[in-house]
Length: 324
Ligand code: UDP
Ligand code: MG
Image 1 (spheres, protein in one colour):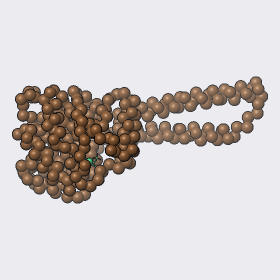
Image 2 (tube, protein in one colour):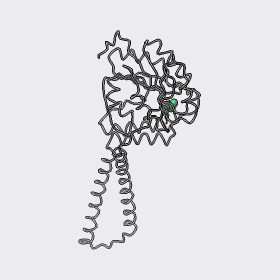
Image 3 (cartoon, helix red, strand yellow):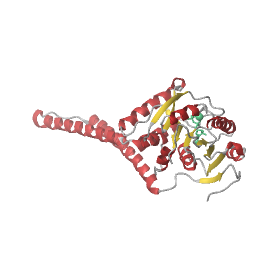
Image 4 (cartoon, helix red, strand yellow):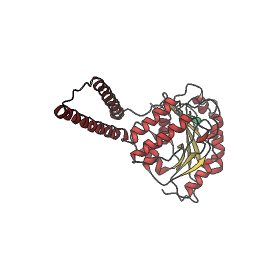
């Protein structure tokens, strides 16, 4: 069924990944519901509790029915990328909007996103324009990341766009059809394509607590992104290996020439040691990079499900319903 976007009242599903958000989740869901009430008569919310160790799941389970909130609870913490993937599975709307549980994503923006959807855009992503207030580590890190991933040239990931976005059903179905277990959503949104547009926004302060993404976790996510969406590290390894081999060959030739024609004695011990150490370092580094790709392949061939759902609680029944 094709909706006439200009006049239709699309069913909107908002998916909300939540990890230890007991202090913020209630208010966030109320804000979202208030906004959705103004936008469409048909809407619902799906909260994915990503293995929270606090009362998040309990709070969501007991939400009043008029908040139309379904709880999908993971058996443990799988990470935000997987929570979003599950949200896309459980979302039934013609339109799906992904928003954080900590109140950083202003629900006011959803009406602007919807306006763009009505103009014919299939994906409308929020682009944060506040990078100046972030730490130097995050700013430089993100710059390096976008530069590295764009070297691969296969996909264009818009800068400073995160998971806060509106997607048409087409986009959601395309994302659901991607079978990979190493899920890097930013890359996957870009990979599926469709007519997309960014709109600027400034994230609000967190309602409570701190970001779950430490420096180490951000670096690990960036590395997953690069190894999932680019073969640049492998190409780089080949290029450096090639250049070093060429240099070594030239050096070898000069040694032979010296020996044969100039009859110079070669002291050489320090150079030998230095070059052995240098070349073994480079080799180990590149074996490590190969190992990273191998690990990703291993993850994929194991064929495990990307996450395990322990409970789904729909708003009508408001009772726990284990799925296994
Ligand atoms: N989140 C999640 N699983 C995790 C970590 C975070 O579902 O393992 C959720 C979190 O509850 C929030 C969103 O992902 O709704 C963004 O997380 P956070 O606010 O910690 O990150 P930041 O705002 O720094 O990107
Ligand atoms: Mg946040």
